[in-house]
Image (cartoon, rainbow, N blue to C red):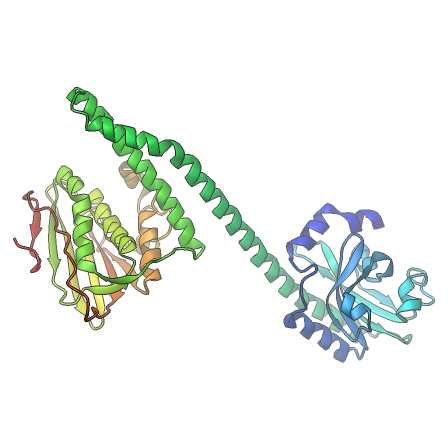
Amino acid sequence: MTYGNALMSPQRLTALRSTGLMDGPREEPFDVFTRLASRMLQAPIALISLVDADRQFFKSLAGLPEPWATARQTPIAYSFCQHVVTSGQVLVISDAREHPLVRDNPSVSELGVAAYLGAPLTTREGHQLGSLCVIDSEPRDWSDGDIAALKDLAVAVMSEVEWRRQVNSSRRDVSVRDQFMAILSHELRTPLSPALLMATAMAADQRLPQDARDDVELIRRNIEVETRLIDDLLDVSRIASGKLELRTAVVDAHALIRSAVALCHQEITAKGVSLRLDLDAERSHVLADGSRLQQVFWNLLKNAVKFTPRDREIAFETFNREERLVIRVRDQGMGIAPHKLRDVFDAFEQTDPTVTRNFGGLGLGLSICKGVVEAHHGSITALSEGQNRGAIFQVELPLTSLPETAHAPTTARAPDACCNILLVDDHVDT
């Protein structure tokens, strides 16, 4: 590879940019390496030099005189390190004034560089970013030990550089993902919102024949499902990037459970399953974002209804364990294989795709539940004795005290007109 091709290689320059180190501030992890190199090799100057197409930038330096120390860069014409980049090898110069490669370099006359030893900073892909080098103002013969020590330090420097590259790559991925999700949400919601309003109005229009209203109602429900999937994708993105916002207050978890039951009432009735509420916890107030926590209960209940066969029972239970509220949702559905229990909360995970694909969904509900619960300093676990033996999802949340000035919250009643919902909660008339 020729001099120009090596220095100007687009792949090399892209790798250099990916470090995020060019023109960045001095940082102690890198300064440690230049101080070590200066002491170990007894050289007055040590540099971590990143070589761009037309200049070299000193990410770290030790002993470099002014004005170069403040500028932290030189034009490429002053660079000895460019030759390390082009060769990919350690460059050993005992007397720069006589060496044909650098004797005309302005650093010899202007900076007083006499002896130079530089080891390449090489990425895993083989791109040369620059060098870790030491400089002496007097000619000297570098020993094999000097060369070995500098090469080892260069490897250590690159460990730090590669870590920075991974961090920068992750940040870029998150940024691109967040931007994509925002665009996805806007572009998909824009046509869905008016369609949902129109379908809702048409489904309620008594002037339409019943068959037409039934068809429109099916369309409306499908639009709602699509809207929910968009919301789920956004929630997964927010949770993964740590951007899930919570508006917390003291809330009654029992009231939120009843609200979730009310929202699922139609599905419970249509499926023909029984729901048993055993809200026995004496204390049920938690510091939480009520809408998010209700979302958890709604997801767990919908999941239980989805997988529980007709004429079977689902139980929603609460009790206190020390200073925590324990919420359990039990179903009598298909169960979860033991080796799948720890994976059920992963995004897009489905316990058995050959079976669960018949129930729809993307496998995001439980992942969202986990993210929301953990954001509330709680925990969620799954238990099952195996296939076709049902499953239990257990949420634990830290309890909080009800403020003395607070009035008892209004309880959202689960609809009790349908006989397949059995309310055994002491707070609800049976």
